[in-house]
Every structure is written in structure tokens, then in C-alpha cells.
Image (cartoon, rainbow over all chains, first blue to last red; front, side, top):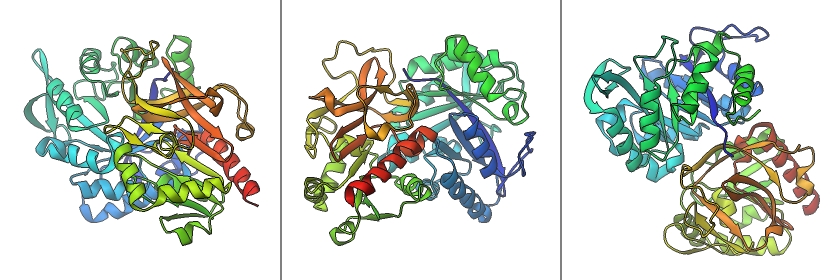
Amino acid sequence: MLTKRIIACLDVDHGRVVKGTKFSGLQDVNDPVELAKYYSEIGIDELVFYDITASNEKRDIFLNVVQETAFNVYIPFTVGGGIRTVDDFNKVLKAGADKVSVNSAAVKDPSIISSAALKFGSQCVVLSIDAKAAGDSWEVYIDGGRTPTGIDAVEWAKKGEALGAGELVLNCIDTDGVKNGFNLRLNRIISEEVSIPVIASGGAGKMEHFLDVFTEGKADAGLAASVFHFGEIDVKELKKYLSDNGVNMRI
Amino acid sequence: MVGIIDYDAGNVGSVMKAIEKLGGNPVLSCDRNVLDKCNILILPGVGSFGLAAKSLKLRAMDEYIKEAVSKGRPFLGICLGMQMLFDKSYEDGENEGLGLISGEVLRFGEGNDPAWDDELKIPHMGWNKLIRNRDDSLLAGLSEGEYAYFVHSYYAVPKDWNDVVLYADYSVRVPGFVRKDNVMGMQFHPEKSSVTGMKLLKNFLKEGNEIAD
């Protein structure tokens, strides 16, 4: 059967991974391509490159990184950050990315999801949702979690699927960076409401959190950044732990 | 040269790069004169069957493929490219495929297979274990139970299970690698399936070059 996926996310600024990493044996811990190779070798199932370069003129540096990665790494990888138009999709896909994730731009103009899905296929359109608790429900935020939209996260997830998104990344602002675990309830609600895969993001601090989000949270994949980069969670160990606990893993 | 058939079927960058990495020389084309110089052909493909079939026809590539294959040229269809090898698909209505391998392509849950589990998500997306149905020379160096990366909502239902080398279990049996002599197809993306996929591609290129010689 299909395995649950473990995904590592790399934030890239001006072609360099921000916040470095603590892997011994790597010549250049800020080189995204070298890191991608490393992760691929230790068995990560997928990678996400998130471009946080603020200035638009510097986008070409990032595209070079994507190209280099595509030539060296043979697992699926998604590119996100600063995707605003169908042409932006085109550029990163041409550079060799497999999927493109879109967030704020899709809230501002949902038709970008359907246009991209029609042009490149749903399988490469990933809708990334930043959600924050608002009473009994969750509200969608955009612009890197700064701007509330008044949109209900569950409704937005359903609409994203209907428009042709092939996958959802659910980033919970409340749990992000706290390392207290993923938002199990929201992951579960959305996983039950949509038929496309849901990637849980935000909150991983220890291995048990992944087990919880795959079982109770019903997520299809778990994404994390710093806990992997800083070796707080070892990817190989994590996959073995999950497998030992009955979660189907690629080992 | 390895001819990648160009019919506007989505993202072919990663296939090209994988071939290059393995020492092959990929060319993307729908020009017979160019493809004639290629000793190996690959039909990539993401997107929907109906559009792809039309697009292939529009470029007369359907006839070209049948011709090339009948002359024994090694041929590999990937993902949608594998589905196109079959007689017909029910994606976008009913559409005819290349008919190089007998069988049909159905949407998960729409076949008559009672084994289908309604709880499962569509698309079948992610890593799944490859189960050996029969042996094949392309499996050289592959261990039992390696994983490959799949993304698809439709799957092939072959008439003859002897054409299936590897399959995956998604409540129903999903053909992953089909082969009839020089005609081969992979439902998963070998170019995205890490070491496992690269081994299969490497074996395909090696054997392809031997057949073509």
C-alpha cells in the first residue's frame, strides 16, 4: 500500500539555505543542492524548496538552484514562494520542479489554480494554506501569515480541490515553530473533507508528533524544516519508528 | 540518441535530465527524421488521456510509434505514456490508445473490481511498494519490495497478466511495469523514484541499446 511521506522543507534566500544546518560531513551546509542530495540519500520522500528572496530580480538565482537540483536529485520536489502567475508555474516547472505550491496568489485570484491545473495537470498544483484558529474554526491567512482573509480554512481547502489542486499543504500558524505537535483536529477535518492528499505542516518537535498526525490527524504526509536540519529528528530513525508503530513507510 | 516524443504532454524536464544523468543523449522531438535517428524511444506524459491521444494523432505520432515498435525499436511509455499503450481509456469519455498491449484504462473505483476500497484517496499519489508478478531482464539489481513514486487517477487493467512485470497494491492491483517484448511501460515515474527508478531506467537504456544494435 501507499506509504505516508516525510517531507523536508528548505527555505532558500538568494540561492542559499537560510539558517544553515548542522549536518556533519557536508562541505557546504547552506548549499541547497548538496542538502537536497543528502536528504535524498538518507531516504526523505520529498523535498520542498521555498524561495523567500524578497526581490523579484533575484529570482533567476533560485531558478538555477531548481535546475541544479533537478539534475542531481531523483525524488519529487516542490517549489514555492513568490508564485503569482501561471507563467511563474511555467518557469519553475521548466527548470525541473515537479510541483509548484501557491498560497496568497490563489486566495487573491483562485482562477490561478484552475488555469495551472488545466495547463500543467493537477498533479503539479499544490495549494498551500496558512490557517489560524478563530474560535471554533480556522481562518485562512495570507502574506506569510500576516493578513487575515475572513475565509474559512476548511471551505478553502474544499474549493481548492474543486478548482483542481492536486495536493494541499496545511500549515497551522498556531502550532508552527512551537514544536508541540501538529494541529491534529484541523488535519483530520480537512483530510476527511477532501480526497486529495493532505500534507501536515507546522509543529513537529518529536517523532511522536508524526505518528499522531498520521493516525489521529489522518494526514498523508508530514512536513518539517528545522527539526530535520538541526538533527533534532533523524529522518532514518523517524521512518523506522513510524514503521515499527504500524505506519507504512518507504524504508 | 534517446528520442523523447514531443506531443505537448506536460513536464518532460525531469525525464530528460534523468536520461542525461545516466549517460544517454535525449532529444525532444515529434519530427520523424529526428526520431528515426534515435535507437530508443520514450513516450512521456502527464495530463489527460483524451487530450494526449488527440495530440499524438495530430502529429501522426501514433502511426510512427506503431511502425517503430513493429520494427523492434525499444520503446518505453511513462505514466500517461504507459496508459497510452493499451487499447482504450475511459478518461475524458472513451478514447482509443495505441493498442500495443491488450487491456483498458479505468478510473480507480469505476472498474468492476470488488477489491477496490472506497476509503482510499484518488489520485494514487506517493510511494508504493513494487510487487513482482514475473521476472524480467530489466529487474537486474532490483530487490524484492523496493518502492516507486506514483501519481495517477486512472490505472491499467490488462487482459493478460503475463504482460505485467511489477504491480503495486492499492486495494486493487495496479500495474506498475508492463512489458511485451520491446514495448515497455511504467505507470510510476522512474525519474522520480530515487535509486530504484534510476536502476530501472539504466537497465532499460542498456538493454535498449543492445536490442537496437
